[in-house]
Image 1: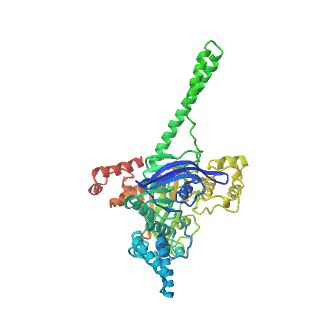
Image 2: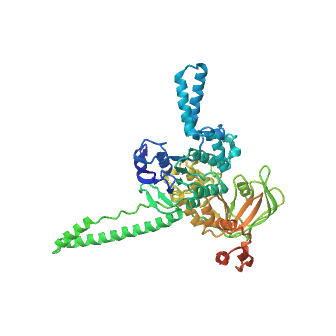
Image 3: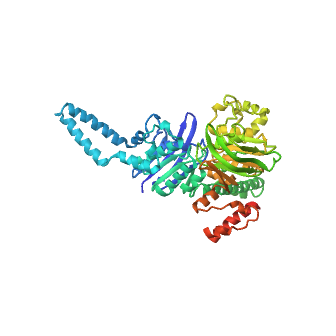
Length: 570
């Protein structure tokens, strides 16, 4: 089996150590998720494996000449270039030969007796035919058709959307025909439909291996069967399962390690006290013997733990039962985007808004907030609403102001000591207080906005892509706190893991209308896959079984649905 043996002794930038003592074997059939914080060096690892970075202490041995295809966080060096010409770059050797043949043809046309050019032309032509015996443009069209981007071939890169760029970049890699894929945040900027397409492609169509960096935990669950945790100063840890398996095993392992450490420390402490007590007495020989025994003990290293983030949203008094009500209304920007026949949001519901990008989800939230007028007919908002709003673009923050000044802008003038205590929950340090927002990274800006929202009393949370830029621990800390939130939440998200943990309902913008689905994204998929069309709210009050459902499902499956919604009611 083809494989690469990797040993990265050290890689640093300036005086900052990025990777150290990273060793593992990459087999051609491995399907690996690489996880942990944004700053841990995951992308650096991929750049080393693909030889974009070479100035490090290392030993990398490639057995069987395993070839790697690297899908970086999507970037094109020439946005004016046509998509078809971008894809042609996958055939560098062919293009170089074509260019060489063209030059030699020009030389021969000028001097038909130039035997050196004739011989070189013959040799290059034979090589060209040997490595490419049919038209590579046909291959480009075949792969483009497979990925659904044929209509983009004559467009320039700058004319296509971000989720289409992901497919273009993937097509280019597939045309290179590597043995193994390195995928760095492949689901960034793409919508749910495109994410699920890529997920299915990797799981069922791609026959070889890959290594994935992604914050989409549901995507990792469905595509990977191994998880590597990279977090300096810890060594690289290996888990033989997907992301969900890794989370459970890591928690269990850390608890066991801590118990072993505490138990050994207590034992060593007790023995040391006994040695001190008996050293000066008649049992000095025993103390000396016991001391030698203690010295031979292999000490358990104290587990390295990172500080955990903390979220906390302050409850205000509840509002009325009806939070929002729409009747025969259009949501619009510069033109109508979608229609709402009738829609109600009630107290305590946690609703996720989903579907494709650019369909008007963020516009919908801004309409609810009163920033955009509704087009036609009726929208009512409930009484006594206190809204906390998290915007995808962090519009509530002034990027030219410091962290401290942004708190003051929202009427939170705290002493430095209190402000330091607050922001430490989001893993900021005291030295960050006087930094301008524009100097923070994307994930730090998101955390700052959450830190400010923490100070506000609310009974209605409105979030637009709240998990964007956040790493795994921040996402899970956010989910944990939102699951305790008593009142109403309305959010947009492409993070299916987040949706499944939080949502009690989905509002799906489809075919220019909003459709209501009872349950989370997992429930919605269940219905789609089985062609089930029923109103799950039938189970809200009595949990009475809809007997028509049994005609479409096995009895046990129908009972499973009944039990699920019955438990929710309780």
